[in-house]
Image 1 (cartoon, one colour):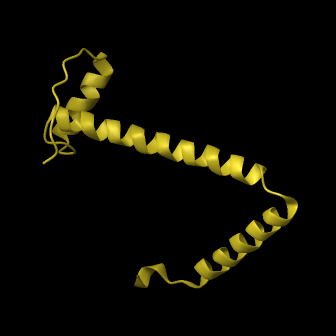
Image 2 (tube, helix red, strand yellow):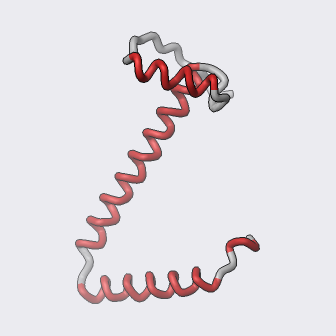
Length: 89
């Protein structure tokens, strides 16, 4: 089990209720675990947003030839994925 750190703070009433509802619903074993899960979700969303910004910046910086090659690759991957049966994986 990862090392835990003590955190003592106050939070908004709605956040407190949300965390306790996670515990009541069985989505977390404790309020501390509920906080961990909420923070992890925020970190994933932040990571996705960062990746989207970086991808957009990369694509905007491509030359016309490189952009065409990216488009060709996207089309090929899309066609290949259409042929896959994800139910069998």
